[in-house]
Amino acid sequence: MFGIPEWALPVLAQGERVIQFTDYPATFVTSRNETSRSLDLRKLDGMFTPKDQFFTTQHMGHPDVDPAAFRLKVTGLVEKPKSYSLDQLKALGATEVPAGFECSGNSPRGMQGLASCGKFTGVPLRKVLSEAGVKADAREIVFFGADHREDEVDFRGTKYKVDQQFGRSLTREEATAPEPFIAWNMNGEPLTKAQGFPLRLIVPGWYGVANVKWLSQIHAQEDVYLGNYQARWYRTLKGEMVDGEMKWTETAISRMHLKSVVARVTSEAGQIKVLGFVLNDGTPLKSVEVKIDNGPWQPATLDASNTKYSWKLFTYAWKGATPGEHTLVSRVTDAKGRVQPEAADLANKKSFLEDNGQMIRKVTIT
Ligand SMILES: Nc1nc2c(c(=O)[nH]1)N[C@H]1C(S)=C(S)[C@@H](COP(=O)(O)O)O[C@H]1N2
Ligand SMILES: [Mo]
Image 1 (tube, protein in one colour):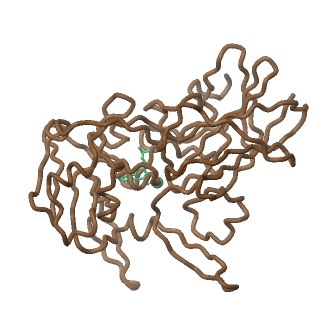
Image 2 (cartoon, protein in one colour; image 1 turned 180 degrees about the horizontal axis):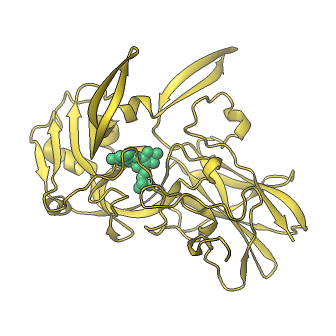
């Protein structure tokens, strides 16, 4: 147990043994405190991530929200501006939705630990929007968190210091779709402060940044919202060859790009099991495959408990593993024919967000 904290040890079934990855040191510690934490994937053993392991991150620290005084405001281009207490909001009715998501900055650098899956309880956003009556000229719905700070806003080289809340937007169409909801519980318990207590938006199938924590205001407007965390910090600069010419684009961070990750390898009674997860935008999956060394792609098995917007767990029974060093990699393909790219295919993606490349893992079989 030298130097390895107790929480870093995987949960093991009886007789099960973890095969350590050699692509990270055995003592690799994912960052862990209440405000910034990665999930240690070597512990992955089920669909729902416990609240004290769920990854967490944000830009401005945690605001203090007094639940008794708290009101969720609905403002802007609406027929009836609203101000809901928590009880009033909960009285609108509740749905339970398993939702898995990752930070758009998740990558091999942090062992893909900025990802988790929870069962969230809340009210569909469109119920709240229809109570307020979104006016015909509203094209954009903006979501503000209670967190704010003075930031530099650059306009053509001049920097202005202004105090702004964390804000994200959805188009009217996206916001009134059946999926987005306002959650107050995760895994049957109130959200923790880190997860956005008392309320957060959950946009199933989208990257984590869309899930505005400490949600305090919903604002309907005609203009496209261009806040810092919408238009500047969360975009992807990439090049694509179009008709033989390199075309550079800048796009917003929205739906999750198809990704699979090998999370954990265990051995029990001579049987080696590979466990991993898939995150995507909710499109049905066609296949998840695993490749050992330079062998062929082999089909992995998707877990029966997977749901549309959960992460999708998969397992692969590795037969005939020989002693020595091996590489392991997974690849997911969806029903629209999209295939998880190889890391090299992303060479023309200059900014680091949305890294969904295949991740090669290494293990030593003894
Ligand atoms: N109010 C607010 N919400 C926020 C953020 C933030 O800085 N402020 N960060 C976003 C980002 S970048 C991510 S990845 C997720 C992380 O959610 P979690 O801490 O529950 O994992 O919260 C999102 N919601
Ligand atoms: Mo994020």
